[in-house]
Length: 275
Image (cartoon, rainbow, N blue to C red; front, side, top):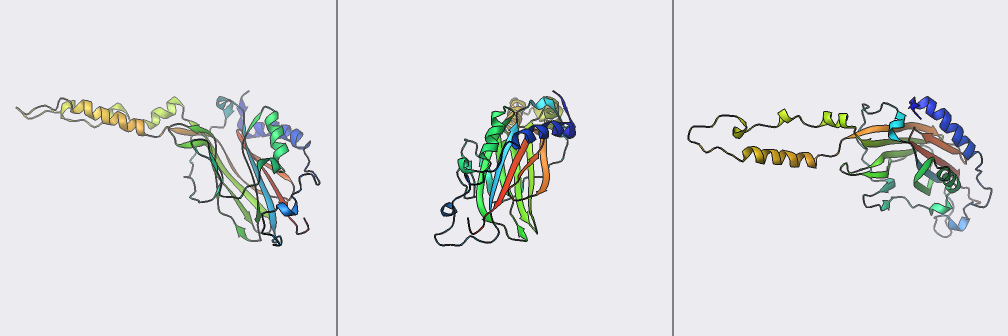
């Protein structure tokens, strides 16, 4: 099915998500974290403005040619420099995070993620949850995200970017993710040097002084160097879709931020001292 723009996609997708998520309720007590399991030193009181934060990143299973977002010509700023990592899958498949994550099966969002995956329409790429204090006027550092399939020759995952959590009076989550794919052949041709751009040498047609030995192998050597340089060039990429959205969070509500190919489930729960 052809998807013509974000609007028509979101009507259908959000109706489907509503049907799934409305059947999912946060249990009143079954998954409430026990007080002894909070990541606090023995005897330490629960800090003020202490929250359980959870993120689930999913990819919508759809053929790239079915997405008609016309994103390939969008300007994309370079990745932000940050030492903080929410969830990153390395080239070999190992994952890393700088956060003290809770086990995935203990997430409040575990059931919602499982339902999305069982629907056959989504693939879960990351599950992350942790405890942290978010006091008023908190300015969070960008949290690096790199998930999805590894794109050989491009040294990147399909989906990369960052997520930032801030708080003024209310908590806000800013999602900044790019979904990349290999550039189409026509786009690759625009990025590749023309044959006429290869520097010429004396052996390529320029005259040589009479009696001088012609560098018979210069042209061959030059082309070999050029070919090696081209092989070392990163694989050209083009933008498939992206998410650029900031959302105000409400405690104990599931929020869904999305594009035609990727989505982010977000859940915050304030932890009170009595818990």
